[in-house]
Length: 190
Ligand code: B4P
Image 1 (tube, protein in one colour):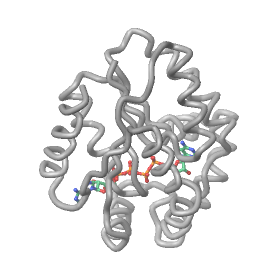
Image 2: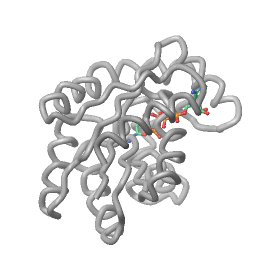
Image 3: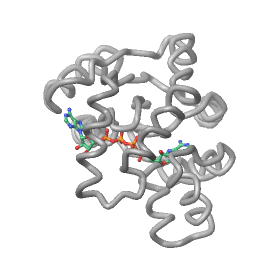
């Protein structure tokens, strides 16, 4: 099993690179952002709660995310491995993922930490906002998302360094260049 956590600030290229990784390694993809946006679109109970947090640039509470993730993970039982995109985003989520995978006789294989300058992140998200229609791709919300990232999500780097799973990936440059760096890192552990 090849279980990859793709990690980085908002706009660092997690979703973009995930698509290429899935094709290359035939993995299943779990994007908590995509699942939440589908719940919002379908106006489910979870979607209604999530909307309130996402529109403010805040994280959806851990308990809701972990329950949601457990259900999605059960639906991927026979896969060659999973790419976790946008999850975990907090230390409690990382601990919960470890328990969930260990219960299934698995673990995280590698954590790819996409490193991108802040000005570039803001620029990418503003550009995406022009076409995505996403309610969180505006300057005010982007600023809160970046602050939340620094306070709540960035500490995960130390968690995965301690686990011996962390690999830093230079996330500036063309999509293809960055994917080349990712392939080198994944091929070294698979
Ligand atoms: P996500 O959907 O995970 O969104 P994201 O971090 O904003 O985007 P991502 O990093 O995937 O985008 P990408 O860089 O690929 O989360 C949205 C919200 O959902 C969160 O703020 C939170 O509220 C909630 N949420 C999700 N997961 C949660 C969790 N686990 N716990 C709690 N809450 C959670 O793309 C950005 C843009 O850059 C694109 O337009 C792309 O085309 C462009 N781009 C990518 N690579 C590029 C490159 N190399 N050069 C130039 N442009 C590039």
